[in-house]
Length: 330
Image (cartoon, rainbow, N blue to C red; front, side, top):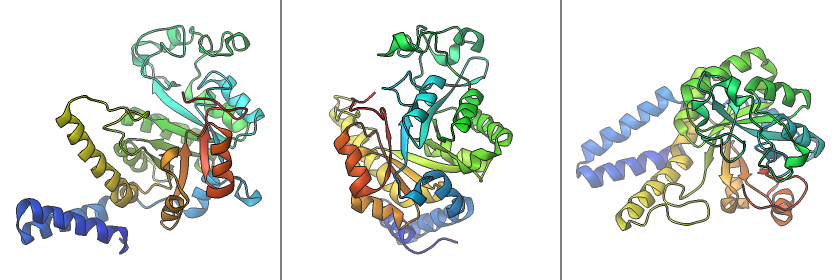
């Protein structure tokens, strides 16, 4: 049953918007009522709080702040590789954030980009290459410590899971697309490794991906990822388009998306955490979500000053590219 609170704000906003557009109180009321029924019927409740806490706060008993190695710690070792997972464990991370992708023959593997060019000696889209060919590529060749990681291979999803479980690391599966394939692959993986229900979560920028995951398996801990102004601006603040009308339209969409994240999507998907770009996280923001039973995880926190801020003031989890030194963003 929906609780009065955020939902009341949401439905009032929908009513007022509907009244403004249709100039009819009856039509606006029907629109708000439809949205209420839709959310009430199709929302997923979050997983039990104790299960979410085991995943999101594995060090809570010791008062620690969870630290996730982004892409396995892309500054310290070749990203999304078994070497990165092992290095992460040695350097004291709580867990790792790994990116799920698929080869042309449907094998789930770890890869952040849509193409192979940046991280391997291959080229072209990941989903255009067969796994047997992908396996021949060097995933450490373009890393700054390439001499230390010669011949590192792109791992399969199962290999990565087994390595993380061996080192008792929390896993965040970052899914960027292909929700049907990802849901099927992760469902099969969770069935094979039931321990994942208490030491992993699935996260995505796309609400439809998270919703698909909850529909496939409501027992999975899930998280939405969010960066305000993501549709209209790149991560460095530069506009995505020079067209005035396009910039205005994407800015409007950004406002609507931000509003939806804070008032609707998180509850519809039943997420347990929200991954937010580090510059938008504050004590008030962490408190806002804590009151709703949702953890805030900042990304990507790469300097000592930022890490100290998260540890001492926010006391909130974060992901980082390096557990050893200050570094730039990847």
